[in-house]
Length: 615
Image 1 (tube, rainbow, N blue to C red):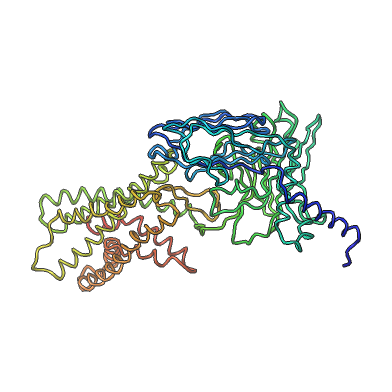
Image 2 (cartoon, rainbow, N blue to C red; image 1 turned 135 degrees about the vertical axis):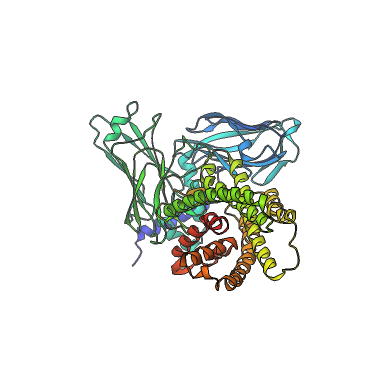
Protein backbone atom coordinates (compact mmCIF):
# COMPACT_ATOMS: atom_id res chain seq x y z
CA UNK A 1 0.00 0.00 0.00
CA UNK A 2 1.44 3.38 -1.03
CA UNK A 3 2.02 5.85 1.75
CA UNK A 4 0.08 9.14 1.51
CA UNK A 5 2.03 12.45 1.40
CA UNK A 6 0.19 13.69 4.47
CA UNK A 7 1.33 10.62 6.42
CA UNK A 8 4.94 11.27 5.44
CA UNK A 9 4.70 14.88 6.63
CA UNK A 10 3.22 13.76 9.96
CA UNK A 11 5.98 11.23 10.48
CA UNK A 12 8.68 13.75 9.56
CA UNK A 13 7.23 16.34 11.95
CA UNK A 14 7.03 13.71 14.70
CA UNK A 15 10.65 12.66 14.24
CA UNK A 16 11.89 16.27 14.35
CA UNK A 17 9.94 17.02 17.53
CA UNK A 18 11.14 13.73 18.98
CA UNK A 19 14.79 14.62 18.49
CA UNK A 20 14.38 17.99 20.18
CA UNK A 21 12.25 16.84 23.11
CA UNK A 22 13.72 13.45 23.93
CA UNK A 23 17.24 14.76 24.01
CA UNK A 24 16.54 17.11 26.88
CA UNK A 25 13.95 15.90 29.36
CA UNK A 26 12.52 18.77 31.35
CA UNK A 27 11.11 16.97 34.37
CA UNK A 28 11.88 14.06 36.66
CA UNK A 29 9.40 11.28 36.11
CA UNK A 30 9.79 9.71 39.55
CA UNK A 31 11.71 9.85 42.81
CA UNK A 32 13.30 6.89 44.55
CA UNK A 33 15.02 7.58 47.84
CA UNK A 34 16.72 4.67 49.61
CA UNK A 35 18.64 4.36 52.84
CA UNK A 36 19.15 2.30 55.98
CA UNK A 37 17.17 3.14 59.07
CA UNK A 38 19.31 2.81 62.20
CA UNK A 39 16.88 2.27 65.08
CA UNK A 40 16.64 0.58 68.43
CA UNK A 41 15.03 -2.76 69.21
CA UNK A 42 11.48 -2.85 70.44
CA UNK A 43 8.28 -1.17 69.35
CA UNK A 44 8.63 0.61 65.99
CA UNK A 45 6.16 2.67 63.97
CA UNK A 46 5.69 4.47 60.66
CA UNK A 47 4.25 7.98 60.94
CA UNK A 48 2.56 9.34 57.80
CA UNK A 49 1.27 12.87 57.24
CA UNK A 50 0.72 13.44 53.52
CA UNK A 51 -1.51 16.08 51.94
CA UNK A 52 -2.10 17.79 48.60
CA UNK A 53 0.15 20.48 47.21
CA UNK A 54 3.74 20.74 46.06
CA UNK A 55 5.81 22.15 48.93
CA UNK A 56 8.01 19.06 49.26
CA UNK A 57 8.50 16.00 51.40
CA UNK A 58 10.58 15.09 54.45
CA UNK A 59 11.80 11.61 55.40
CA UNK A 60 13.00 11.51 58.99
CA UNK A 61 13.85 8.78 61.48
CA UNK A 62 14.45 8.35 65.18
CA UNK A 63 15.12 5.47 67.55
CA UNK A 64 11.53 4.24 67.38
CA UNK A 65 9.82 5.79 64.35
CA UNK A 66 10.19 6.45 60.64
CA UNK A 67 8.28 9.55 59.52
CA UNK A 68 7.15 10.72 56.09
CA UNK A 69 5.36 14.04 55.85
CA UNK A 70 4.85 16.76 53.30
CA UNK A 71 2.71 18.11 50.48
CA UNK A 72 3.40 16.48 47.13
CA UNK A 73 0.17 14.77 46.06
CA UNK A 74 -2.66 15.84 43.75
CA UNK A 75 -5.50 14.10 45.56
CA UNK A 76 -4.04 11.81 48.26
CA UNK A 77 -4.49 12.78 51.92
CA UNK A 78 -3.32 10.49 54.67
CA UNK A 79 -2.43 10.85 58.33
CA UNK A 80 -1.72 7.59 60.11
CA UNK A 81 0.55 5.73 62.54
CA UNK A 82 1.35 2.17 61.41
CA UNK A 83 3.03 -0.39 63.73
CA UNK A 84 6.02 -2.00 62.01
CA UNK A 85 6.69 -4.89 64.38
CA UNK A 86 4.39 -7.06 62.27
CA UNK A 87 7.06 -6.92 59.54
CA UNK A 88 9.83 -8.32 61.74
CA UNK A 89 11.85 -5.12 62.18
CA UNK A 90 11.95 -5.22 65.98
CA UNK A 91 14.63 -7.93 66.02
CA UNK A 92 17.27 -5.96 64.06
CA UNK A 93 18.92 -2.54 64.39
CA UNK A 94 19.37 -1.67 60.69
CA UNK A 95 16.42 -1.80 58.29
CA UNK A 96 16.92 -0.99 54.59
CA UNK A 97 14.06 0.93 53.00
CA UNK A 98 13.13 2.77 49.80
CA UNK A 99 10.51 5.44 49.16
CA UNK A 100 9.07 5.65 45.63
CA UNK A 101 7.07 8.60 44.30
CA UNK A 102 5.32 8.53 40.89
CA UNK A 103 3.63 11.88 40.17
CA UNK A 104 1.73 10.67 37.10
CA UNK A 105 -0.11 8.08 39.18
CA UNK A 106 -0.13 10.17 42.36
CA UNK A 107 1.31 7.05 43.98
CA UNK A 108 3.59 6.88 47.02
CA UNK A 109 5.05 3.54 48.10
CA UNK A 110 7.44 2.51 50.88
CA UNK A 111 9.44 -0.69 50.67
CA UNK A 112 10.76 -1.96 54.02
CA UNK A 113 12.70 -5.18 53.80
CA UNK A 114 10.63 -7.51 51.64
CA UNK A 115 7.36 -5.70 52.27
CA UNK A 116 5.86 -2.99 50.03
CA UNK A 117 3.48 -0.60 51.78
CA UNK A 118 1.20 1.59 49.68
CA UNK A 119 0.94 5.00 51.28
CA UNK A 120 -0.98 6.67 48.42
CA UNK A 121 -3.07 4.49 46.12
CA UNK A 122 -2.75 4.99 42.35
CA UNK A 123 -4.98 7.69 40.94
CA UNK A 124 -5.89 9.26 37.64
CA UNK A 125 -4.23 12.14 35.82
CA UNK A 126 -5.16 15.63 37.07
CA UNK A 127 -4.09 19.11 35.97
CA UNK A 128 -0.84 19.56 37.90
CA UNK A 129 1.80 17.11 39.14
CA UNK A 130 4.46 17.61 41.78
CA UNK A 131 7.83 16.56 40.40
CA UNK A 132 11.53 17.52 40.31
CA UNK A 133 11.96 16.74 44.01
CA UNK A 134 15.39 18.20 44.80
CA UNK A 135 17.46 17.45 47.89
CA UNK A 136 17.60 20.27 50.42
CA UNK A 137 20.03 21.08 53.20
CA UNK A 138 21.49 18.34 55.39
CA UNK A 139 20.32 17.85 58.96
CA UNK A 140 22.36 17.18 62.07
CA UNK A 141 24.18 13.92 62.65
CA UNK A 142 22.70 11.56 65.22
CA UNK A 143 23.03 8.12 66.76
CA UNK A 144 19.70 7.04 65.29
CA UNK A 145 18.38 8.05 61.89
CA UNK A 146 19.02 7.38 58.21
CA UNK A 147 22.43 6.39 56.88
CA UNK A 148 23.62 5.77 53.31
CA UNK A 149 20.91 8.00 51.87
CA UNK A 150 20.68 7.59 48.08
CA UNK A 151 18.67 9.08 45.22
CA UNK A 152 18.61 6.85 42.14
CA UNK A 153 21.59 4.87 43.48
CA UNK A 154 23.67 8.04 43.94
CA UNK A 155 24.84 8.27 47.56
CA UNK A 156 24.14 11.62 49.20
CA UNK A 157 26.02 10.86 52.40
CA UNK A 158 26.98 7.72 54.33
CA UNK A 159 26.61 9.48 57.67
CA UNK A 160 23.56 9.06 59.88
CA UNK A 161 21.15 11.99 59.35
CA UNK A 162 17.97 12.61 61.27
CA UNK A 163 16.09 13.69 58.13
CA UNK A 164 16.27 14.24 54.38
CA UNK A 165 14.24 17.07 52.88
CA UNK A 166 13.17 17.40 49.26
CA UNK A 167 11.55 20.41 47.63
CA UNK A 168 9.07 20.01 44.77
CA UNK A 169 7.97 21.91 41.67
CA UNK A 170 4.57 21.88 39.98
CA UNK A 171 4.22 21.08 36.31
CA UNK A 172 1.44 20.21 33.88
CA UNK A 173 0.64 16.51 34.15
CA UNK A 174 -0.18 16.23 30.45
CA UNK A 175 3.22 17.62 29.48
CA UNK A 176 4.88 15.14 31.84
CA UNK A 177 2.86 12.31 30.35
CA UNK A 178 3.76 13.34 26.79
CA UNK A 179 7.40 13.38 27.84
CA UNK A 180 7.13 9.74 28.96
CA UNK A 181 5.51 8.81 25.64
CA UNK A 182 8.24 10.47 23.58
CA UNK A 183 11.08 9.00 25.64
CA UNK A 184 9.70 5.48 25.50
CA UNK A 185 9.22 5.80 21.74
CA UNK A 186 12.69 7.23 21.15
CA UNK A 187 14.27 4.31 22.98
CA UNK A 188 13.14 1.94 20.21
CA UNK A 189 14.88 1.52 16.90
CA UNK A 190 14.23 4.24 14.34
CA UNK A 191 12.69 1.84 11.81
CA UNK A 192 10.04 0.88 14.37
CA UNK A 193 8.93 4.46 14.91
CA UNK A 194 6.08 4.40 12.40
CA UNK A 195 4.62 1.27 14.01
CA UNK A 196 5.09 2.69 17.50
CA UNK A 197 3.19 5.85 16.54
CA UNK A 198 0.13 3.71 15.97
CA UNK A 199 0.53 1.23 18.84
CA UNK A 200 2.16 3.10 21.75
CA UNK A 201 0.41 2.65 25.06
CA UNK A 202 -0.25 5.91 26.83
CA UNK A 203 1.64 5.66 30.15
CA UNK A 204 -0.88 7.65 32.17
CA UNK A 205 -4.11 6.57 33.75
CA UNK A 206 -7.20 7.66 31.85
CA UNK A 207 -9.92 9.36 33.90
CA UNK A 208 -13.59 9.59 33.01
CA UNK A 209 -16.35 11.26 35.03
CA UNK A 210 -20.08 10.63 34.86
CA UNK A 211 -22.66 12.95 36.39
CA UNK A 212 -25.69 11.06 37.70
CA UNK A 213 -28.49 13.52 37.18
CA UNK A 214 -32.13 13.13 38.10
CA UNK A 215 -33.66 10.19 36.23
CA UNK A 216 -30.27 8.52 35.73
CA UNK A 217 -30.77 5.37 33.62
CA UNK A 218 -27.24 4.05 33.60
CA UNK A 219 -24.15 4.96 31.64
CA UNK A 220 -21.38 3.32 29.61
CA UNK A 221 -17.72 4.32 29.93
CA UNK A 222 -15.13 3.17 27.40
CA UNK A 223 -11.38 3.19 27.84
CA UNK A 224 -9.34 4.90 25.12
CA UNK A 225 -8.05 2.64 22.36
CA UNK A 226 -4.30 2.20 22.11
CA UNK A 227 -3.71 0.31 18.88
CA UNK A 228 -5.38 2.34 16.18
CA UNK A 229 -8.89 3.28 15.16
CA UNK A 230 -9.95 -0.26 14.20
CA UNK A 231 -9.16 -1.80 17.57
CA UNK A 232 -11.69 -2.33 20.33
CA UNK A 233 -11.26 -0.68 23.75
CA UNK A 234 -9.35 -2.63 26.38
CA UNK A 235 -12.08 -2.11 28.98
CA UNK A 236 -15.69 -0.98 29.18
CA UNK A 237 -17.78 -0.11 32.24
CA UNK A 238 -21.56 -0.07 32.53
CA UNK A 239 -22.96 1.81 35.53
CA UNK A 240 -26.45 0.56 36.52
CA UNK A 241 -29.39 2.86 37.38
CA UNK A 242 -29.40 1.42 40.93
CA UNK A 243 -26.17 3.32 41.59
CA UNK A 244 -28.04 6.63 41.74
CA UNK A 245 -30.20 5.39 44.61
CA UNK A 246 -27.21 4.30 46.72
CA UNK A 247 -24.97 7.33 46.12
CA UNK A 248 -27.05 9.87 48.04
CA UNK A 249 -24.50 12.57 48.87
CA UNK A 250 -22.55 12.74 45.62
CA UNK A 251 -23.69 12.42 42.02
CA UNK A 252 -20.28 12.17 40.31
CA UNK A 253 -18.74 8.77 39.49
CA UNK A 254 -15.03 8.65 38.65
CA UNK A 255 -13.73 5.78 36.55
CA UNK A 256 -9.98 5.32 36.05
CA UNK A 257 -8.26 2.95 33.60
CA UNK A 258 -4.71 1.91 34.51
CA UNK A 259 -2.40 0.41 31.89
CA UNK A 260 0.39 -1.98 32.95
CA UNK A 261 0.87 -0.65 36.47
CA UNK A 262 3.30 -3.04 38.15
CA UNK A 263 1.98 -2.10 41.60
CA UNK A 264 -1.11 -4.28 41.11
CA UNK A 265 1.07 -7.32 40.36
CA UNK A 266 3.28 -7.06 43.47
CA UNK A 267 3.28 -10.10 45.73
CA UNK A 268 1.65 -12.38 43.16
CA UNK A 269 3.83 -14.95 41.40
CA UNK A 270 1.31 -17.67 40.59
CA UNK A 271 -1.23 -15.31 38.98
CA UNK A 272 -0.98 -12.51 36.44
CA UNK A 273 -3.00 -9.32 36.10
CA UNK A 274 -4.45 -9.21 32.59
CA UNK A 275 -3.97 -5.83 30.93
CA UNK A 276 -6.07 -3.04 32.43
CA UNK A 277 -6.96 -2.39 36.04
CA UNK A 278 -10.15 -0.35 36.49
CA UNK A 279 -10.83 1.85 39.50
CA UNK A 280 -14.40 3.04 40.14
CA UNK A 281 -15.48 5.28 43.00
CA UNK A 282 -17.85 7.96 44.15
CA UNK A 283 -15.97 10.59 46.13
CA UNK A 284 -16.52 10.37 49.90
CA UNK A 285 -18.95 7.46 49.44
CA UNK A 286 -18.65 3.74 50.23
CA UNK A 287 -20.69 1.81 47.68
CA UNK A 288 -21.45 -1.86 48.49
CA UNK A 289 -24.22 -4.42 47.97
CA UNK A 290 -25.70 -2.93 44.80
CA UNK A 291 -29.00 -4.50 43.81
CA UNK A 292 -27.86 -4.38 40.17
CA UNK A 293 -24.17 -5.09 39.48
CA UNK A 294 -21.64 -2.90 37.73
CA UNK A 295 -20.58 -4.61 34.49
CA UNK A 296 -16.89 -4.35 33.60
CA UNK A 297 -15.76 -5.86 30.32
CA UNK A 298 -12.07 -6.64 29.87
CA UNK A 299 -10.65 -7.28 26.39
CA UNK A 300 -7.29 -9.00 26.70
CA UNK A 301 -4.88 -11.38 25.01
CA UNK A 302 -6.16 -14.91 24.44
CA UNK A 303 -6.02 -17.05 27.60
CA UNK A 304 -5.61 -20.86 27.24
CA UNK A 305 -8.37 -22.98 28.77
CA UNK A 306 -5.90 -24.66 31.11
CA UNK A 307 -5.27 -21.30 32.79
CA UNK A 308 -8.42 -20.31 34.69
CA UNK A 309 -9.24 -16.60 35.04
CA UNK A 310 -11.23 -14.84 37.68
CA UNK A 311 -12.65 -11.38 38.31
CA UNK A 312 -11.18 -9.87 41.46
CA UNK A 313 -11.21 -6.65 43.43
CA UNK A 314 -8.93 -4.92 45.92
CA UNK A 315 -10.79 -3.44 48.88
CA UNK A 316 -8.55 -0.62 50.10
CA UNK A 317 -10.62 -0.26 53.28
CA UNK A 318 -9.72 -3.78 54.43
CA UNK A 319 -6.17 -3.85 53.01
CA UNK A 320 -4.96 -0.24 52.82
CA UNK A 321 -1.23 -1.00 52.76
CA UNK A 322 -0.82 -3.91 50.36
CA UNK A 323 -2.62 -5.14 47.25
CA UNK A 324 -4.78 -8.14 48.07
CA UNK A 325 -7.02 -9.40 45.28
CA UNK A 326 -10.25 -11.11 46.40
CA UNK A 327 -13.17 -12.65 44.53
CA UNK A 328 -15.69 -11.33 47.06
CA UNK A 329 -18.54 -9.40 45.47
CA UNK A 330 -17.66 -10.24 41.84
CA UNK A 331 -18.91 -12.88 39.41
CA UNK A 332 -16.93 -13.98 36.36
CA UNK A 333 -18.40 -14.52 32.91
CA UNK A 334 -15.91 -15.79 30.33
CA UNK A 335 -17.36 -14.55 27.04
CA UNK A 336 -14.46 -15.56 24.81
CA UNK A 337 -10.80 -16.43 25.14
CA UNK A 338 -10.09 -12.71 24.74
CA UNK A 339 -13.07 -11.26 26.61
CA UNK A 340 -14.01 -11.50 30.30
CA UNK A 341 -16.95 -9.71 31.90
CA UNK A 342 -17.06 -8.97 35.63
CA UNK A 343 -20.31 -8.38 37.50
CA UNK A 344 -19.50 -6.61 40.77
CA UNK A 345 -21.79 -5.21 43.48
CA UNK A 346 -19.36 -2.66 44.95
CA UNK A 347 -16.80 0.01 44.00
CA UNK A 348 -13.02 -0.19 44.26
CA UNK A 349 -10.18 -1.45 41.98
CA UNK A 350 -11.06 -4.32 39.61
CA UNK A 351 -9.00 -6.65 37.42
CA UNK A 352 -8.90 -10.10 35.86
CA UNK A 353 -6.31 -12.54 37.21
CA UNK A 354 -5.18 -15.62 35.32
CA UNK A 355 -3.71 -18.63 37.13
CA UNK A 356 -0.15 -19.54 36.12
CA UNK A 357 1.43 -21.83 38.73
CA UNK A 358 1.31 -24.00 40.75
CA UNK A 359 -1.03 -26.77 39.56
CA UNK A 360 -4.45 -26.37 41.21
CA UNK A 361 -5.69 -29.28 43.34
CA UNK A 362 -8.78 -31.10 42.11
CA UNK A 363 -11.58 -32.02 44.54
CA UNK A 364 -9.94 -30.04 47.35
CA UNK A 365 -13.18 -29.74 49.35
CA UNK A 366 -13.69 -33.52 49.36
CA UNK A 367 -10.03 -34.16 50.21
CA UNK A 368 -10.21 -31.65 53.06
CA UNK A 369 -13.35 -33.30 54.47
CA UNK A 370 -11.75 -36.77 54.29
CA UNK A 371 -8.56 -35.52 55.94
CA UNK A 372 -10.42 -33.77 58.75
CA UNK A 373 -12.56 -36.83 59.44
CA UNK A 374 -9.53 -39.12 59.27
CA UNK A 375 -7.48 -36.94 61.62
CA UNK A 376 -10.32 -36.80 64.15
CA UNK A 377 -10.85 -40.58 64.06
CA UNK A 378 -7.11 -41.26 64.18
CA UNK A 379 -6.63 -38.94 67.16
CA UNK A 380 -9.38 -40.67 69.14
CA UNK A 381 -8.00 -44.10 68.15
CA UNK A 382 -4.48 -43.11 69.22
CA UNK A 383 -5.71 -41.87 72.59
CA UNK A 384 -7.54 -45.18 73.12
CA UNK A 385 -4.37 -47.05 72.08
CA UNK A 386 -2.20 -44.99 74.46
CA UNK A 387 -4.52 -45.82 77.38
CA UNK A 388 -4.53 -49.50 76.40
CA UNK A 389 -0.72 -49.69 76.09
CA UNK A 390 -0.16 -47.83 79.39
CA UNK A 391 -2.34 -50.36 81.21
CA UNK A 392 -0.68 -53.28 79.41
CA UNK A 393 2.79 -51.92 80.15
CA UNK A 394 2.21 -52.29 83.90
CA UNK A 395 1.56 -56.04 83.71
CA UNK A 396 3.76 -57.01 80.77
CA UNK A 397 7.46 -56.70 80.01
CA UNK A 398 7.03 -56.96 76.24
CA UNK A 399 9.88 -55.04 74.56
CA UNK A 400 7.72 -53.58 71.80
CA UNK A 401 5.25 -51.76 74.08
CA UNK A 402 7.41 -48.59 74.58
CA UNK A 403 7.89 -48.40 70.79
CA UNK A 404 4.17 -48.78 70.06
CA UNK A 405 3.47 -46.17 72.72
CA UNK A 406 5.93 -43.69 71.19
CA UNK A 407 4.36 -44.13 67.74
CA UNK A 408 0.85 -43.66 69.15
CA UNK A 409 1.86 -40.46 70.96
CA UNK A 410 3.56 -38.97 67.86
CA UNK A 411 0.61 -39.85 65.61
CA UNK A 412 -1.89 -38.40 68.08
CA UNK A 413 0.09 -35.13 68.21
CA UNK A 414 0.41 -35.03 64.40
CA UNK A 415 -3.29 -35.62 63.77
CA UNK A 416 -4.39 -33.11 66.39
CA UNK A 417 -2.13 -30.39 65.01
CA UNK A 418 -3.03 -31.10 61.38
CA UNK A 419 -6.74 -30.99 62.24
CA UNK A 420 -6.42 -27.41 63.55
CA UNK A 421 -3.81 -26.08 61.09
CA UNK A 422 -6.42 -24.37 58.89
CA UNK A 423 -7.92 -22.58 61.90
CA UNK A 424 -4.51 -21.44 63.14
CA UNK A 425 -3.51 -20.27 59.62
CA UNK A 426 -6.31 -17.68 59.68
CA UNK A 427 -5.24 -16.14 63.00
CA UNK A 428 -4.16 -12.54 62.37
CA UNK A 429 -0.73 -13.10 63.87
CA UNK A 430 2.03 -13.70 61.36
CA UNK A 431 4.47 -15.40 63.73
CA UNK A 432 1.76 -17.84 64.87
CA UNK A 433 1.82 -19.72 61.58
CA UNK A 434 5.62 -19.83 61.62
CA UNK A 435 5.62 -21.65 64.96
CA UNK A 436 2.71 -23.92 64.03
CA UNK A 437 4.41 -24.86 60.75
CA UNK A 438 7.65 -25.72 62.57
CA UNK A 439 5.85 -27.81 65.23
CA UNK A 440 3.81 -29.60 62.55
CA UNK A 441 7.04 -30.44 60.71
CA UNK A 442 8.50 -31.78 63.96
CA UNK A 443 5.41 -33.93 64.56
CA UNK A 444 5.68 -35.36 61.03
CA UNK A 445 9.40 -36.14 61.40
CA UNK A 446 8.77 -37.70 64.82
CA UNK A 447 6.09 -39.96 63.34
CA UNK A 448 8.45 -40.98 60.55
CA UNK A 449 11.15 -41.72 63.15
CA UNK A 450 8.87 -43.98 65.17
CA UNK A 451 7.76 -45.80 62.02
CA UNK A 452 11.44 -46.36 61.23
CA UNK A 453 11.97 -47.62 64.77
CA UNK A 454 9.06 -50.06 64.31
CA UNK A 455 10.70 -51.37 61.13
CA UNK A 456 14.12 -51.73 62.79
CA UNK A 457 12.67 -53.34 65.95
CA UNK A 458 10.66 -55.87 63.95
CA UNK A 459 13.80 -56.78 62.03
CA UNK A 460 15.64 -57.13 65.37
CA UNK A 461 13.01 -59.46 66.81
CA UNK A 462 12.94 -61.65 63.71
CA UNK A 463 16.64 -61.93 62.91
CA UNK A 464 18.57 -61.02 66.09
CA UNK A 465 16.71 -63.29 68.46
CA UNK A 466 19.41 -63.90 71.07
CA UNK A 467 20.50 -60.25 71.64
CA UNK A 468 18.36 -57.83 73.73
CA UNK A 469 17.05 -54.76 71.91
CA UNK A 470 18.29 -51.26 72.87
CA UNK A 471 16.94 -49.62 76.01
CA UNK A 472 13.68 -47.59 75.76
CA UNK A 473 15.47 -44.29 76.41
CA UNK A 474 17.47 -44.86 73.19
CA UNK A 475 14.23 -45.13 71.23
CA UNK A 476 12.89 -41.96 72.89
CA UNK A 477 16.02 -40.04 71.93
CA UNK A 478 15.70 -41.15 68.30
CA UNK A 479 11.90 -40.74 68.13
CA UNK A 480 11.36 -37.50 70.06
CA UNK A 481 14.68 -35.61 70.37
CA UNK A 482 16.44 -36.28 67.06
CA UNK A 483 13.56 -34.89 64.84
CA UNK A 484 13.78 -31.58 66.70
CA UNK A 485 17.36 -30.97 65.47
CA UNK A 486 16.61 -30.27 61.77
CA UNK A 487 13.50 -28.26 62.69
CA UNK A 488 15.50 -25.99 65.03
CA UNK A 489 18.16 -25.50 62.34
CA UNK A 490 15.56 -24.66 59.67
CA UNK A 491 13.73 -22.28 62.02
CA UNK A 492 17.02 -20.51 62.75
CA UNK A 493 17.69 -20.10 59.01
CA UNK A 494 14.31 -18.37 58.68
CA UNK A 495 11.79 -17.82 55.86
CA UNK A 496 10.96 -21.54 55.68
CA UNK A 497 7.89 -21.98 57.88
CA UNK A 498 4.72 -19.92 57.51
CA UNK A 499 1.37 -19.76 55.75
CA UNK A 500 0.91 -22.04 52.73
CA UNK A 501 -1.92 -21.66 50.21
CA UNK A 502 -3.34 -24.81 48.59
CA UNK A 503 -5.12 -23.71 45.42
CA UNK A 504 -8.40 -25.50 44.49
CA UNK A 505 -9.05 -26.02 40.78
CA UNK A 506 -12.67 -24.86 40.97
CA UNK A 507 -11.97 -21.58 42.80
CA UNK A 508 -8.32 -20.65 42.40
CA UNK A 509 -8.64 -17.33 44.21
CA UNK A 510 -10.04 -18.83 47.42
CA UNK A 511 -7.12 -21.01 48.52
CA UNK A 512 -7.12 -23.34 51.51
CA UNK A 513 -4.74 -21.87 54.08
CA UNK A 514 -2.54 -23.99 56.30
CA UNK A 515 0.58 -23.54 58.41
CA UNK A 516 3.44 -25.46 56.87
CA UNK A 517 6.52 -24.78 54.75
CA UNK A 518 6.39 -21.73 52.50
CA UNK A 519 6.52 -21.79 48.70
CA UNK A 520 10.08 -20.63 48.07
CA UNK A 521 13.42 -22.17 47.11
CA UNK A 522 14.70 -22.51 50.69
CA UNK A 523 11.53 -24.27 51.87
CA UNK A 524 11.57 -26.59 48.85
CA UNK A 525 15.20 -27.55 49.53
CA UNK A 526 14.36 -28.15 53.20
CA UNK A 527 11.43 -30.36 52.16
CA UNK A 528 13.69 -32.46 49.91
CA UNK A 529 16.47 -32.78 52.50
CA UNK A 530 14.19 -33.79 55.37
CA UNK A 531 10.79 -35.20 54.38
CA UNK A 532 11.61 -36.74 51.00
CA UNK A 533 14.98 -38.10 52.12
CA UNK A 534 13.46 -39.83 55.15
CA UNK A 535 10.64 -41.25 53.02
CA UNK A 536 13.16 -42.51 50.48
CA UNK A 537 14.76 -44.54 53.29
CA UNK A 538 11.62 -45.45 55.26
CA UNK A 539 9.33 -46.63 52.44
CA UNK A 540 11.68 -49.22 50.83
CA UNK A 541 12.65 -50.51 54.30
CA UNK A 542 9.00 -50.76 55.29
CA UNK A 543 8.09 -52.63 52.09
CA UNK A 544 10.89 -55.14 52.62
CA UNK A 545 9.91 -55.69 56.25
CA UNK A 546 6.22 -55.98 55.30
CA UNK A 547 7.12 -58.73 52.86
CA UNK A 548 9.19 -60.57 55.49
CA UNK A 549 6.41 -60.35 58.08
CA UNK A 550 3.88 -61.54 55.51
CA UNK A 551 6.01 -64.64 54.90
CA UNK A 552 5.91 -65.40 58.63
CA UNK A 553 2.16 -65.00 59.20
CA UNK A 554 0.59 -66.16 55.94
CA UNK A 555 0.62 -69.84 57.05
CA UNK A 556 -1.30 -69.21 60.25
CA UNK A 557 -4.88 -70.44 60.51
CA UNK A 558 -6.34 -67.01 61.28
CA UNK A 559 -4.77 -65.61 58.12
CA UNK A 560 -7.31 -67.58 56.11
CA UNK A 561 -9.98 -65.16 57.36
CA UNK A 562 -10.16 -62.32 54.84
CA UNK A 563 -11.04 -59.71 57.48
CA UNK A 564 -7.98 -60.54 59.58
CA UNK A 565 -5.72 -60.60 56.53
CA UNK A 566 -6.96 -57.23 55.31
CA UNK A 567 -6.67 -55.52 58.69
CA UNK A 568 -3.21 -56.98 59.26
CA UNK A 569 -1.85 -55.77 55.92
CA UNK A 570 -3.50 -52.36 56.32
CA UNK A 571 -2.21 -51.95 59.86
CA UNK A 572 1.31 -53.14 59.08
CA UNK A 573 1.48 -50.88 56.00
CA UNK A 574 0.75 -47.82 58.12
CA UNK A 575 2.90 -49.10 60.97
CA UNK A 576 5.93 -49.40 58.69
CA UNK A 577 5.25 -46.16 56.77
CA UNK A 578 4.76 -47.80 53.37
CA UNK A 579 1.54 -45.86 52.64
CA UNK A 580 3.58 -42.65 52.46
CA UNK A 581 5.25 -44.10 49.37
CA UNK A 582 2.14 -43.08 47.39
CA UNK A 583 3.55 -39.56 47.31
CA UNK A 584 6.08 -40.78 44.72
CA UNK A 585 3.24 -41.94 42.41
CA UNK A 586 1.37 -38.61 42.18
CA UNK A 587 1.66 -38.06 38.42
CA UNK A 588 -0.05 -38.93 35.15
CA UNK A 589 -3.68 -39.88 34.54
CA UNK A 590 -4.02 -41.71 37.88
CA UNK A 591 -2.98 -38.66 39.88
CA UNK A 592 -6.46 -37.95 41.30
CA UNK A 593 -6.91 -41.59 42.38
CA UNK A 594 -3.48 -41.64 44.05
CA UNK A 595 -4.21 -38.39 45.91
CA UNK A 596 -7.51 -39.77 47.26
CA UNK A 597 -5.89 -43.07 48.25
CA UNK A 598 -2.97 -41.27 49.92
CA UNK A 599 -5.37 -39.00 51.78
CA UNK A 600 -7.57 -41.87 53.04
CA UNK A 601 -4.79 -44.23 54.11
CA UNK A 602 -2.59 -41.68 55.87
CA UNK A 603 -5.32 -39.65 57.55
CA UNK A 604 -6.81 -42.88 58.98
CA UNK A 605 -3.43 -44.39 59.88
CA UNK A 606 -4.06 -43.83 63.61
CA UNK A 607 -7.13 -46.07 63.34
CA UNK A 608 -5.17 -48.73 61.44
CA UNK A 609 -2.37 -48.77 64.01
CA UNK A 610 -4.92 -48.98 66.84
CA UNK A 611 -6.65 -51.85 65.03
CA UNK A 612 -3.40 -53.76 64.63
CA UNK A 613 -1.91 -53.16 68.08
CA UNK A 614 -4.84 -52.50 70.36
CA UNK A 615 -7.43 -55.05 69.28
